[in-house]
Amino acid sequence: MRLVEQEAQHRHTQEDRVVRTNATLALRGQWISVVLVVLLAAIGTLLTLKGYPSVGSVIFATTIAAVAAVFIYGKSKEGQKQPDRDDEPKPPTTR
Image 1 (cartoon, rainbow, N blue to C red):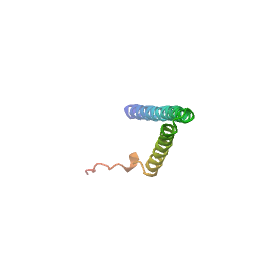
Image 2 (cartoon, rainbow, N blue to C red):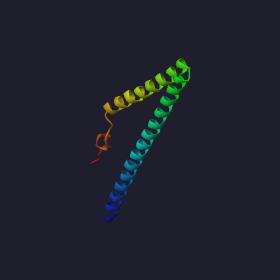
Image 3 (cartoon, helix red, strand yellow):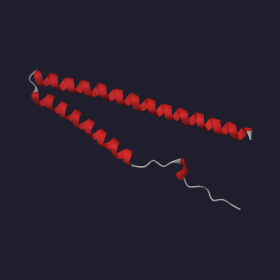
Image 4 (spheres, rainbow, N blue to C red):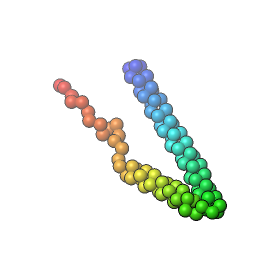
């Protein structure tokens, strides 16, 4: 019985570690995205003000389009149901 309890504790520890890692990766990705969007928007604005309106507009517009595309892709992924462990097919039982 003790072995089963140890296995369950190990499994919970591993699952907690996976959840924390996924949350950390998601947060890091969001921060990188914010920095890139602000940087590219600033570059596009600066180029427009310096007399290169077409280049600045392209950089600015593609930045906004990329953010919108990632947002839409993320929302479509949220709508799809992730299979739970309970939904996994069970091996056939023998009697």
